[in-house]
Length: 169
Image 1 (cartoon, rainbow, N blue to C red):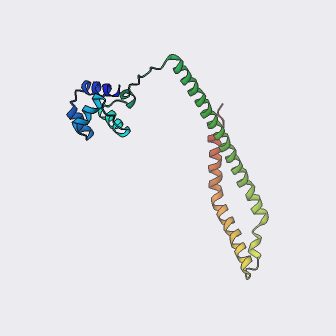
Image 2: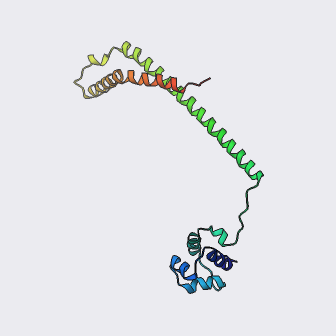
Image 3: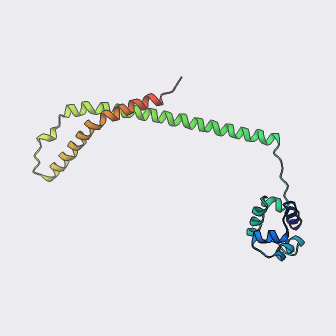
């Protein structure tokens, strides 16, 4: 069957055995042996033949292509519908998580300001002659300094995030 298919497809493409042999980098006698059924091309060569013929390997091997039936289309459309529903659910879940993350971020930022005001930077009165106290004081001061400068922008960004991720009616 393979030998007949190779010969039929070669002739339908208007190729001689010599032309096909040149395309496949084999000698003409190899093509002749394949077409007579005296030898069979290996798997790599089958792929090369299918590429030269612009035909699937399954066609070379004699498989007939079965056209999809209406039931197949219905099953595929049902599967696609389920996938679309799952993707929509994931999107809404992701949106809810982001929404609550932004709300939490706003809450934390707003709650940190009163804490910093109540603490009133007590580390400024510490004795910095001890290395441990100096390191802790610098870390706390750095956090406070960065927070006061970055938090307003983060708060604005979080508020915008809350607005963008809210559920639309």
